[in-house]
Length: 231
Image 1 (tube, rainbow, N blue to C red):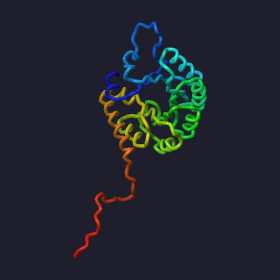
Image 2 (image 1 turned 30 degrees about the vertical axis):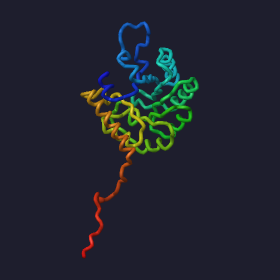
Image 3 (image 1 turned 135 degrees about the vertical axis):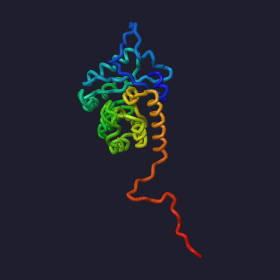
Image 4 (image 1 turned 90 degrees about the vertical axis):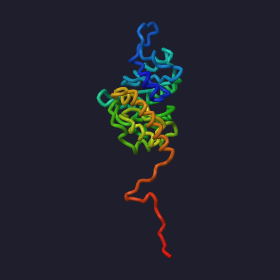
């Protein structure tokens, strides 16, 4: 994990609060002990919550354990698809923002919901590319475009990335970042995949800023020549 973090160039690492022993009296080490807090911003998340109440409780546990007010908010709808329950997500976002948390919500790729989250005070929106851990890459490019048009806050694609080309496409479409775990953690060579993701995110961002050529139905000579005129 440490080597993968270094290879990825990540600046932020998210941690599932409900899956970590936060007891200050614990003797055994957890993976939190292997994350350099001077180098990486820790982003606690509410993974495993299926109601707004559960998510809020996990957020309070993280804050009480000294993990701060920065929070990736997840409220899942069901254990089969792991798609977000956007109604509960909106409810939890409203409450936690009022309580002073800095909320980064994991959401569906719905531009209407994204705008509502921003209006409630979320500092960014984190739409899925495809279901968590599916590795299918972005399934609805058009919706990402609509989300970018709907909100003024950063858009970070979260969930579903499978390989480097998926990350590059997300960035080429205008995403401000990509959050991932499974694509790296479950790769045959996680450290090499982390490095590939770093290059893909960089290349995709540069391509977005450079501005791609328009798509055409027919061929177009890359080196057009003016008509030669004989003497």
